[in-house]
Structure formats: structure tokens, C-alpha cells
Image (tube, rainbow, N blue to C red; front, top):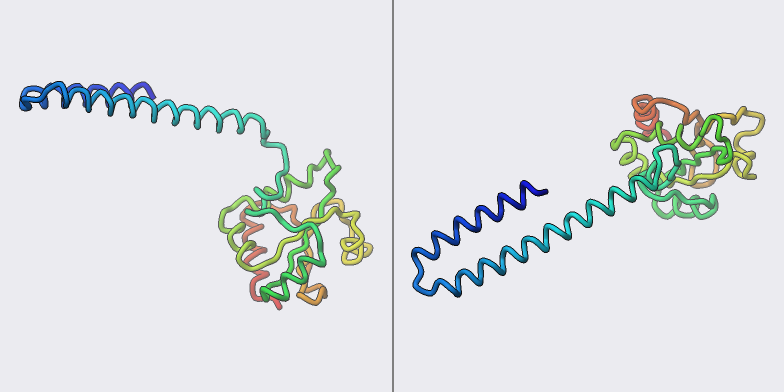
Length: 188
């Protein structure tokens, strides 16, 4: 920051000396250059304020916190009926993700975030599916999971009518997550 500011000031001083040597109306030009330096200093201060705010925000959001909007690239829906209606309207399928939000031992939210870590995965999910995130104890999740072990986060790919196409674990590495999402694209 200081280097940028000092470089800018030096450049302006150099220009000032050149301008003053060539212009008869030196006071007017000097005042204009001083106004520009002042504006640059204000801009630099605003930039520093933004950097400080971003740094403080980053410190307030630890890396071990699950933020669904960040994991999926946009906030997922939390109501399956709304997701199914949107899927019919948009001619997409529903990706129902289930996890245990109270599971601190396995931290299922972070497993989901790891699965969707690649930008391409988030992009494919946003472009091709209506995403809904529900607790594994939710009645709709129980309907699709049946007797399945849901100790790890799972997804259920649903048609707009609510029928299940396929299900799998969301507890995978980012590369496997991308491979799985790509494999879902042609499924109807």
C-alpha cells in the first residue's frame, strides 16, 4: 500500500516539476495536481478500509463453519415442494442433499462443502439442478432414505414428479464430486 502511494506521489511530483517548468500559469496547475493527489489519497484510504473489512469478515467466518450458499454456489432451497414446483417450471431435476446439522463429530456440512469444492462442480449444480438441503431427520429424507444408513451426507436425484432417479454419498473428495455430478447430467 505504502509503495503504491509513494510511487504515485513521486510520479505526481515529477509531473509537477515538468508542468511548472513549461506552463506560465503554474499556480493553477499545482493546485490541480494537489487536488489529484488528495483524491488518490482518499481512494487509497477507501481501498484500505475495504481490505480491513474483508480481513475482519474472514476472521469472523472460520473455515470449519458450513455455509450452504457457499458450498452450493447459491443458497439451496429448504422446502422440497417448492423445489419440485421449480423443477417442473424450469425443466430441471431436484438434487435433494441431506445431512445431520448437529453432527459435530463428522461435520457433515464440511463433507458437503468438500464434495462441491471445485468451481466447475458448483457451476454444473447451479445450471442443471434445483438444489434443496434438508436435515437427514426430515420426513421427506426419511421417505427416500428408507432403511439406508444416513450417517454420512447423501443426495437423492429426483424427477420433477418426486420420483427418485439415483442416490449416493456426498462424502467424497472434490474430484470425485465433480465426476459424480457429471455422471448425473444425462440421467432422466
